[in-house]
Length: 131
Length: 104
Image (cartoon, rainbow over all chains, first blue to last red; front, side, top):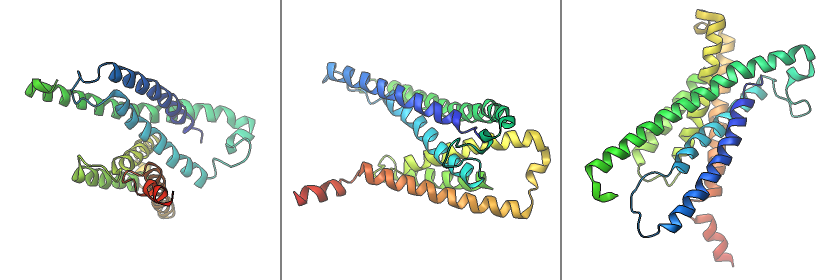
């Protein structure tokens, strides 16, 4: 019902973090221009993968909730929220399904980032001149 | 069935993305991440449902199965629409930007 609130909140936070990281990377790049030649994937790009998964997944999940009549386009937006007895169900769902959704997406992204980092290290060892 | 439909969409998009890599002019990578995100979220939903209904999860009623398949197809279409909007906004080929420049 309201499980999608958790990944959407995470997507907002990670989007803000990505913006901050990207501006830091651009500043660092401008200072080291002409010196750094390594072809590592910037962390902001890696964060972009997580953002795409979170925003895209949440959008499709919101559609599924609309399909099942759990989200409505008028206040209070969640059909369960109109009934005070169901409010606790909303929070329970956010704490179980919502948190699990965010955790699985983040874990998969983490695994992808770890694998990419390992590949970059391997590449660097094979061709130290690239750095 | 929605999970399965989205999962297949994610796998197909990933194969297309890898086939064209390192070039990603059509931003198929973004589309595959959209589907992967949705598939993983439905996987979480499936885990929660499996915990509560156990093996019954794998034997849904035909009407429920059909509705879920129908929803899955809509979800795939919506993913494509989101990707198309993203593609037109980003305009990696510069075609739309070029159109405006020509008019100036």
